[in-house]
Image (cartoon, rainbow, N blue to C red; front, side, top):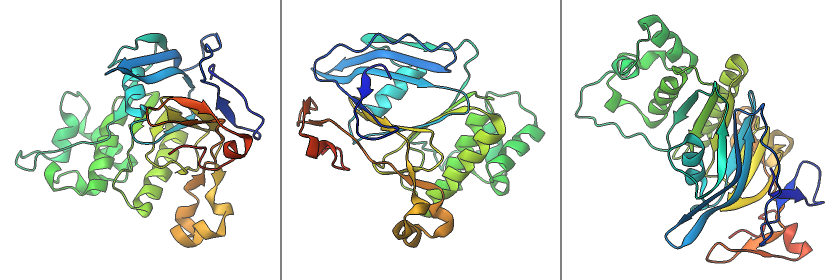
Length: 287
């Protein structure tokens, strides 16, 4: 990530130095599914995104975290081409096909529509392929149920199946485990990992949790309007306390991400340098 520099806080971590310096002119990665360089968004008198650089490759799972209002969903919209940045550029590989699972999907219980009918809308997929896709997300049993009767977890799997029908090489999930308990979260993380292994697509997963992330993430990026830091998570299974909290099976789906920030943010979101002691704070100086 071009706007970041080695911080000396440990292997695998990069801290962003966004204190008024121009971003590095790192060239675009031609092998990446999608690349962003120097992306900036200015809305309502303030900067929503500041010099954000990002690459996502095939078979790579990138988890994007950050506090509420940090610009995570805005960045996803820019990457998807739904919003044009005021500065910078996003490049997508020519063969890029995106499967998108939104943060929320509201279905009207009054409208009679089965899961099968929902998956066939706007699609020429065969009934056999619909059946196969539902099986791949462990949702075969809901095929003939009304969409409005599904539980939150069942609906999430159906929406995931619809995204996979596009045969994506990049799967984007915007806070897919919001409102789901830890057991459901672990199941979904394990499912995403299994699907990635089978299909080989890249994954961008936006998470609401600042510290507990998907264990199979290849990289974690902390965003607070700019890239604060990035690194590799530590397996939760190595920490007995988490095993007792989640249970030994679910614990393997989670990992701890330790923030290494060399700055803090004021109430307006503006970054400021902090002392070395504060930079080593696991909370990363974020409020």
